Image 1 (spheres, rainbow, N blue to C red):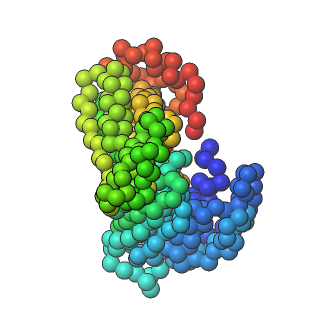
Image 2: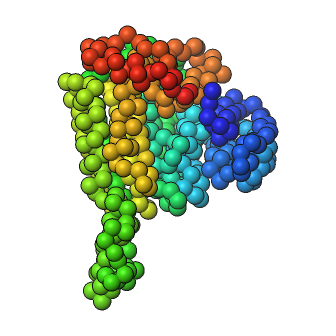
Image 3: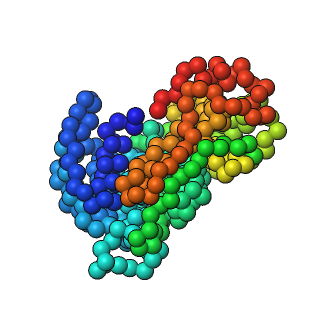
Length: 391
């Protein structure tokens, strides 16, 4: 099963654009508290319609029925803007397959040089709940597609954006396949041995003028969230201070907790750590997140990610994310839960264009054969896998 109505819309729109087959989708999110299209869904549909020069009907907020009549996929410059904190990366999910196939499916009259590159500016939330964060896409998904299918795509992260205002911006570049070409089938059945793990954490916040700060007399110790910084100054000082900013130490705490959990369960695996404190130029709003990537001897990349939540300790976020990565490794799968959906989407597109059948070993509820790294932790693995992961 795929996630709710949004995933169905993205897949359906992308497949329609690639195959030039009109589609009609009804009862969109009919059982939700706010049924119909939301801003993020609409932004994705409009982006795909633009890329395929198609006609979108029913494209309004709240609409429970849409139709898309695609024409020809085109390489070029496009903009996708959620105008909210909606995920930029879910827009990229819908657009990327279309951009890759643009040249391969363009009309003979509109044929352009092979390898034409499209550029899509995406605006909204770069690190949003219920969606892969930008760092995951950059360090797991795109490298996997490059290795497996020679997909040439990259992300230029210009500014992170967080809930509730968004404000993030990135540029997705993707080279189209040569005219008449198709993506090769995927054969991914051997996880191999884990050779390295990388942990990346970030923190971000806002800078406000001293005149916006409450006076020292109004402030009481202990009134703020311990994970946040509430500095106060006298307005007369005329200086700037960091207010409501996630402390840089939160990122370090996440990395340290994740590293400890991973070392307990994956001994003798080198772990590289990176913590970035974003500035007002590189992030809008305040937030924090962590991404972990495990690389194996057969070239597999398994990832896990976590987004900071108010009231949730940094260590808890890190440990939950680390456990997710450990579970993926112990399962013997060649893709994690998040990239699984992307790979599935790619496989669907391949079937539509006769590129052959793909074989991918996915994460399931049965324990795969265990390597030397995990034998000592058999008890933990069995406990973690008692409850099958949601797919």
